[in-house]
Length: 256
Image 1 (cartoon, rainbow, N blue to C red):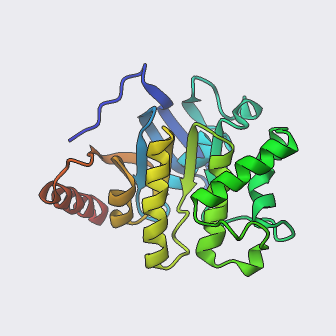
Image 2: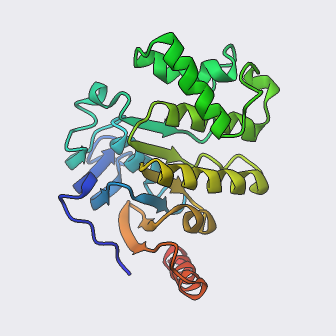
Protein backbone atom coordinates (compact mmCIF):
# COMPACT_ATOMS: atom_id res chain seq x y z
CA UNK A 1 0.00 0.00 0.00
CA UNK A 2 1.26 3.49 -0.76
CA UNK A 3 1.46 6.19 1.86
CA UNK A 4 -0.06 9.26 0.24
CA UNK A 5 1.35 12.55 1.50
CA UNK A 6 -0.28 15.86 0.67
CA UNK A 7 1.79 18.93 -0.11
CA UNK A 8 0.22 20.75 2.86
CA UNK A 9 1.29 18.05 5.32
CA UNK A 10 4.81 17.61 3.92
CA UNK A 11 7.57 18.85 6.21
CA UNK A 12 10.23 17.49 3.83
CA UNK A 13 9.72 17.82 0.09
CA UNK A 14 11.92 16.94 -2.90
CA UNK A 15 10.54 17.92 -6.31
CA UNK A 16 12.17 16.29 -9.34
CA UNK A 17 15.58 16.41 -7.69
CA UNK A 18 18.72 15.40 -9.58
CA UNK A 19 22.24 15.32 -8.20
CA UNK A 20 25.28 14.89 -10.44
CA UNK A 21 28.89 14.51 -9.36
CA UNK A 22 31.93 15.23 -11.49
CA UNK A 23 32.07 17.32 -14.63
CA UNK A 24 29.12 16.62 -16.91
CA UNK A 25 30.21 15.12 -20.24
CA UNK A 26 33.32 13.41 -18.84
CA UNK A 27 33.88 9.78 -17.90
CA UNK A 28 34.17 10.81 -14.25
CA UNK A 29 30.64 12.24 -14.16
CA UNK A 30 27.80 10.24 -12.69
CA UNK A 31 24.23 10.83 -11.53
CA UNK A 32 23.50 9.85 -7.92
CA UNK A 33 19.87 11.03 -7.78
CA UNK A 34 17.62 11.03 -10.82
CA UNK A 35 14.37 13.02 -10.87
CA UNK A 36 13.36 12.11 -7.32
CA UNK A 37 9.96 13.17 -5.98
CA UNK A 38 9.56 12.54 -2.25
CA UNK A 39 7.38 14.04 0.46
CA UNK A 40 7.51 13.26 4.18
CA UNK A 41 4.70 14.43 6.43
CA UNK A 42 5.12 15.73 9.96
CA UNK A 43 5.34 12.96 12.56
CA UNK A 44 6.31 10.31 10.05
CA UNK A 45 9.14 7.82 10.58
CA UNK A 46 10.57 7.18 7.12
CA UNK A 47 13.11 4.45 6.47
CA UNK A 48 15.16 5.02 3.31
CA UNK A 49 16.32 1.58 2.22
CA UNK A 50 18.62 0.53 -0.57
CA UNK A 51 21.86 -1.11 -1.58
CA UNK A 52 25.21 0.59 -1.03
CA UNK A 53 25.70 3.27 -3.66
CA UNK A 54 22.00 3.77 -4.45
CA UNK A 55 22.05 7.44 -3.38
CA UNK A 56 20.67 7.23 0.17
CA UNK A 57 23.44 9.34 1.68
CA UNK A 58 23.22 11.91 -1.11
CA UNK A 59 19.51 12.38 -0.39
CA UNK A 60 20.31 12.58 3.32
CA UNK A 61 22.95 15.26 2.71
CA UNK A 62 20.58 17.36 0.59
CA UNK A 63 17.85 17.23 3.24
CA UNK A 64 20.44 18.15 5.88
CA UNK A 65 21.61 21.12 3.82
CA UNK A 66 25.13 19.73 3.42
CA UNK A 67 24.92 19.76 -0.38
CA UNK A 68 22.55 21.25 -2.95
CA UNK A 69 20.78 19.51 -5.82
CA UNK A 70 22.05 19.91 -9.36
CA UNK A 71 18.44 20.55 -10.36
CA UNK A 72 15.02 20.36 -8.73
CA UNK A 73 13.83 21.68 -5.38
CA UNK A 74 14.54 20.56 -1.82
CA UNK A 75 12.46 22.12 0.94
CA UNK A 76 12.38 21.38 4.66
CA UNK A 77 9.74 23.21 6.70
CA UNK A 78 9.17 25.27 3.56
CA UNK A 79 12.79 26.47 3.41
CA UNK A 80 15.89 25.70 1.40
CA UNK A 81 18.17 23.76 3.79
CA UNK A 82 21.34 24.51 1.81
CA UNK A 83 20.77 28.24 1.26
CA UNK A 84 19.31 28.78 4.74
CA UNK A 85 21.51 26.35 6.66
CA UNK A 86 21.83 28.52 9.80
CA UNK A 87 18.05 28.81 10.15
CA UNK A 88 17.85 25.07 10.88
CA UNK A 89 20.09 25.24 13.94
CA UNK A 90 18.07 23.65 16.75
CA UNK A 91 15.32 22.63 14.30
CA UNK A 92 17.04 19.63 12.72
CA UNK A 93 19.38 17.15 14.43
CA UNK A 94 21.56 14.39 13.00
CA UNK A 95 22.51 11.02 14.47
CA UNK A 96 25.47 9.60 12.56
CA UNK A 97 26.72 6.07 11.98
CA UNK A 98 29.45 6.62 14.57
CA UNK A 99 28.79 8.55 17.75
CA UNK A 100 31.11 11.50 16.95
CA UNK A 101 31.59 12.27 20.64
CA UNK A 102 34.37 14.63 21.63
CA UNK A 103 36.84 12.47 23.62
CA UNK A 104 37.88 15.32 25.93
CA UNK A 105 34.31 15.95 27.07
CA UNK A 106 32.29 13.84 29.49
CA UNK A 107 28.97 12.27 28.50
CA UNK A 108 26.95 15.16 29.87
CA UNK A 109 29.28 17.72 28.32
CA UNK A 110 28.85 16.02 24.95
CA UNK A 111 25.07 16.19 25.27
CA UNK A 112 25.35 19.85 26.22
CA UNK A 113 27.33 20.68 23.09
CA UNK A 114 24.32 21.38 20.85
CA UNK A 115 22.68 23.38 23.62
CA UNK A 116 25.82 25.52 23.94
CA UNK A 117 25.55 26.30 20.23
CA UNK A 118 21.94 27.32 20.83
CA UNK A 119 23.21 29.62 23.62
CA UNK A 120 21.09 28.00 26.31
CA UNK A 121 22.05 29.14 29.81
CA UNK A 122 24.35 26.81 31.74
CA UNK A 123 21.88 25.67 34.40
CA UNK A 124 19.11 24.87 31.91
CA UNK A 125 21.67 23.21 29.65
CA UNK A 126 22.86 20.90 32.40
CA UNK A 127 19.30 20.04 33.49
CA UNK A 128 18.24 19.20 29.93
CA UNK A 129 21.33 17.10 29.25
CA UNK A 130 20.85 15.18 32.50
CA UNK A 131 17.20 14.54 31.68
CA UNK A 132 18.01 12.96 28.33
CA UNK A 133 20.92 10.90 29.64
CA UNK A 134 18.63 9.52 32.33
CA UNK A 135 15.84 8.79 29.82
CA UNK A 136 18.32 6.84 27.74
CA UNK A 137 19.50 4.76 30.70
CA UNK A 138 22.78 6.54 31.36
CA UNK A 139 22.05 7.93 34.81
CA UNK A 140 25.25 7.52 36.82
CA UNK A 141 27.48 7.79 33.73
CA UNK A 142 27.19 11.57 33.29
CA UNK A 143 30.83 12.20 34.13
CA UNK A 144 32.29 9.27 32.21
CA UNK A 145 34.48 10.07 29.22
CA UNK A 146 33.76 8.32 25.89
CA UNK A 147 36.69 5.91 26.26
CA UNK A 148 35.05 4.50 29.41
CA UNK A 149 31.72 3.81 27.67
CA UNK A 150 30.71 0.85 25.51
CA UNK A 151 29.74 1.37 21.87
CA UNK A 152 26.06 1.16 22.73
CA UNK A 153 26.44 3.65 25.57
CA UNK A 154 28.30 6.10 23.35
CA UNK A 155 25.53 5.89 20.76
CA UNK A 156 22.98 6.53 23.53
CA UNK A 157 24.90 9.72 24.35
CA UNK A 158 24.73 10.66 20.66
CA UNK A 159 20.96 10.09 20.62
CA UNK A 160 20.56 12.07 23.86
CA UNK A 161 22.49 14.93 22.25
CA UNK A 162 20.07 14.96 19.29
CA UNK A 163 16.91 14.86 21.42
CA UNK A 164 18.23 17.46 23.89
CA UNK A 165 18.09 20.20 21.25
CA UNK A 166 14.32 19.54 20.88
CA UNK A 167 14.68 19.58 17.09
CA UNK A 168 11.48 18.62 15.31
CA UNK A 169 13.31 16.76 12.54
CA UNK A 170 15.79 13.92 13.14
CA UNK A 171 18.05 12.63 10.39
CA UNK A 172 19.67 9.27 11.14
CA UNK A 173 22.46 7.79 9.01
CA UNK A 174 22.63 4.07 9.89
CA UNK A 175 23.21 4.93 13.58
CA UNK A 176 23.10 1.33 14.85
CA UNK A 177 25.04 -0.45 12.09
CA UNK A 178 28.30 -0.57 14.07
CA UNK A 179 26.66 -2.21 17.11
CA UNK A 180 26.02 -5.86 17.86
CA UNK A 181 22.47 -6.90 17.00
CA UNK A 182 21.30 -7.30 20.59
CA UNK A 183 22.41 -3.76 21.50
CA UNK A 184 21.13 -2.36 18.19
CA UNK A 185 17.74 -3.97 18.70
CA UNK A 186 17.28 -2.41 22.13
CA UNK A 187 18.34 1.01 20.86
CA UNK A 188 16.02 0.81 17.85
CA UNK A 189 13.07 0.09 20.14
CA UNK A 190 13.97 2.99 22.44
CA UNK A 191 14.59 5.33 19.53
CA UNK A 192 11.20 4.63 17.91
CA UNK A 193 9.46 5.12 21.25
CA UNK A 194 11.16 8.47 21.85
CA UNK A 195 10.41 9.71 18.33
CA UNK A 196 6.72 8.86 18.69
CA UNK A 197 6.37 10.12 22.27
CA UNK A 198 7.95 13.45 21.36
CA UNK A 199 6.17 13.96 18.03
CA UNK A 200 9.31 14.09 15.90
CA UNK A 201 9.66 13.59 12.16
CA UNK A 202 12.50 11.20 11.34
CA UNK A 203 14.34 10.04 8.23
CA UNK A 204 16.34 6.90 8.87
CA UNK A 205 18.87 5.51 6.38
CA UNK A 206 19.42 1.76 6.42
CA UNK A 207 20.45 -1.12 4.17
CA UNK A 208 18.68 -3.70 6.36
CA UNK A 209 15.14 -4.82 5.53
CA UNK A 210 14.59 -6.02 9.11
CA UNK A 211 15.73 -2.70 10.54
CA UNK A 212 13.50 -0.76 8.14
CA UNK A 213 10.50 -2.82 9.24
CA UNK A 214 11.33 -2.23 12.91
CA UNK A 215 11.99 1.49 12.54
CA UNK A 216 9.64 2.85 9.94
CA UNK A 217 5.95 3.47 9.56
CA UNK A 218 6.87 4.04 5.92
CA UNK A 219 9.63 2.47 3.83
CA UNK A 220 10.95 3.91 0.58
CA UNK A 221 13.16 1.51 -1.37
CA UNK A 222 15.60 3.16 -3.75
CA UNK A 223 17.25 1.89 -6.89
CA UNK A 224 20.36 3.39 -8.48
CA UNK A 225 20.56 6.19 -9.46
CA UNK A 226 18.26 7.18 -6.63
CA UNK A 227 14.68 6.81 -7.76
CA UNK A 228 11.83 5.25 -5.83
CA UNK A 229 11.34 1.57 -6.65
CA UNK A 230 8.81 0.83 -3.89
CA UNK A 231 6.98 3.00 -1.36
CA UNK A 232 4.93 1.37 1.40
CA UNK A 233 3.31 2.51 4.63
CA UNK A 234 2.18 0.46 7.63
CA UNK A 235 1.46 0.88 11.36
CA UNK A 236 1.14 -1.04 14.60
CA UNK A 237 -2.03 -2.72 13.41
CA UNK A 238 -0.32 -4.23 10.36
CA UNK A 239 -0.32 -7.98 10.89
CA UNK A 240 2.53 -10.46 10.59
CA UNK A 241 1.31 -11.83 7.26
CA UNK A 242 1.17 -8.34 5.70
CA UNK A 243 4.59 -7.46 7.10
CA UNK A 244 5.99 -10.67 5.61
CA UNK A 245 4.44 -9.74 2.26
CA UNK A 246 6.13 -6.33 2.48
CA UNK A 247 9.46 -7.98 3.37
CA UNK A 248 9.16 -10.30 0.39
CA UNK A 249 8.28 -7.46 -1.96
CA UNK A 250 11.25 -5.41 -0.76
CA UNK A 251 13.52 -8.41 -1.27
CA UNK A 252 12.27 -8.79 -4.84
CA UNK A 253 12.86 -5.09 -5.58
CA UNK A 254 16.40 -5.16 -4.16
CA UNK A 255 17.24 -8.31 -6.10
CA UNK A 256 16.69 -6.60 -9.44
